[in-house]
Image 1 (tube, rainbow, N blue to C red):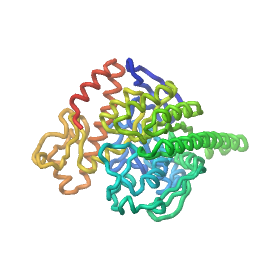
Image 2: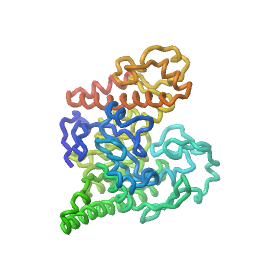
Image 3: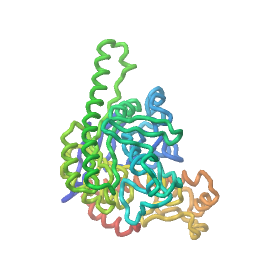
Image 4: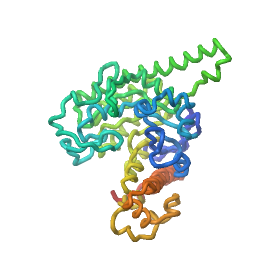
Length: 427
């Protein structure tokens, strides 16, 4: 992997760089637009690119269930299957283990948020699908859809109830078949509410799984090279898609564990690193400092699942190079739009006759061609176009935020950029 740091933010861990991948470069810091099942919801690949998206992140677990990695491989890999020519990242499936296991039946995110009750009767199950459940107190272990053991995870398909098995080796094999550029080691994502004993247990298991992922990843490539030597005529058929393997730092909310995990993962043969969730939202800055002062400076770092504008600003300053989150497109489909002054609900009555664009000065397709009044009408009328136009704007806003942050780093004005943005943006 070629990762070049172009300039650093003075007196901080932040930097601007360029990451080279088999499908093009990524100018960092950058946002990985989430296309869970090989599609960014409500948008075509061309529309995604026009929002400024450099890279897409897809979900190993979901693509394994639908349509299956074998079909994707037969189609020529995920790039061809979804018609996206730029870089693609896939996660390992570890977060879905958390969703189906520890978090199933409880309103728990991998990022703890102030004021969230664990006894809610409504939960976010998978990809924001809200389903009614019984009280948390009545939810027994048998109701969980995933069970973790030392070797891997057994889980039920929430679609039809079929049983499946994920191990570090199968995660590597599935991601290999998908043919993406950056892949993640299989990890155990824990609840931010888990105590230090379980966080330590899960962290150590994640480290053991990381070692197995490295072995599986290397052995697969070496095996293919040996087959090349046997039959030079099969080179095209057996052509290797170079993939970069990132290890994931875990450890929850605990400084001691985060530092141990960072040291352990940093010592392994990874091309880059993911920083897992399971911490308090208010402590992201501290957690990143604990971790990124230990991780090798010359390798890229991906902050998993973070996409709120203020968190992005802090994450960049504290050394994160890549980010991903479903937030921009998810809230767009619910009528919430991002602006430099904060979020707005386009269905609010005051926008029903507002003939100005979503945000003055925004160059996205939606702002250049439509008004708040029109978008408000589309959402009230439940028209599909509403989700498309809102998603275009939110993705453009997010990608443009990263672009502005990168330019300010290169110009040596990040502190000024950060303070001005934080002063205007209201939660």
